[in-house]
Length: 347
Image (cartoon, rainbow, N blue to C red):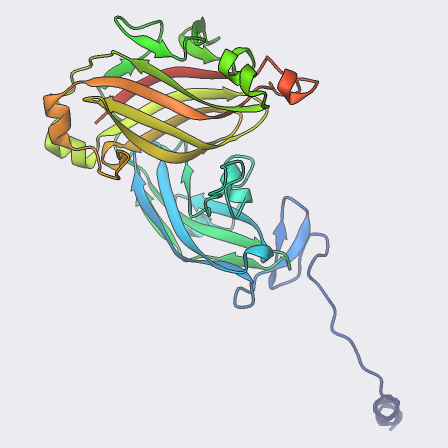
């Protein structure tokens, strides 16, 4: 009887028991929440109320070591916080310590709704690349989208296999200076790369054109020309299915290049792939040959490689003048470096 009297008194007094708020608490988390390892805070796993989501998450292409993923952003851009790509070899590994989670530190574009430092266009981020995969291996991935209310949206799953390890590549550049090749800009020098090889070194802080511009970040293309590499032995089947351009480089500066590019020069026409975001690290870039396009959007064809040699290969981007931890005004920095180690066509 005393129990019922207590309950009646609570009702009559208008006492309301507030629900316990469990989001944004320190990990470990209650059921229905996940731990955000970057902040050690709990986040809701519900997706229906997330203000930033995506549609159509999917793999687009793969090479032996790289996979391209794309999506369509949905929702309020002002509510967006970050993307993360979660990838593993099996579906069961997703959400466990066996999964690899790629964030903005590894792929800087994942921390932005629009690409920064890309002029007036400020392209919306609709894709990313995952690097350093094993050849001939199947991967499954999903995109995680976090909004300002700590809601985490999880996309549908995408599955893609990498290609076989390439053999017998057509080498375009692999220091020292190729003959009769030439390089632009002329401020590029060939140096030892610290790993027993050579690389083309570009220093934005000592480039006269960059100094005259007076900016801390300089846009420049590093192109080896007059290469004359005959790749006519590449079959149409190889071009269509496995042919890829590989460029190995190091961004030894203190900032990402948010709109980098690679290109091949064939019959004096440039066939580009862009944008690529490159953090301050060494990176092995790989792009299918069929994804290279000229200024009009026309793709490189197998027929063109049958009738003309590859005369140039390029690595371009927006490069900081500063090296990591270099003190002083960015416009006074001179230690930032970009190293172009090698380039080849694989099949």
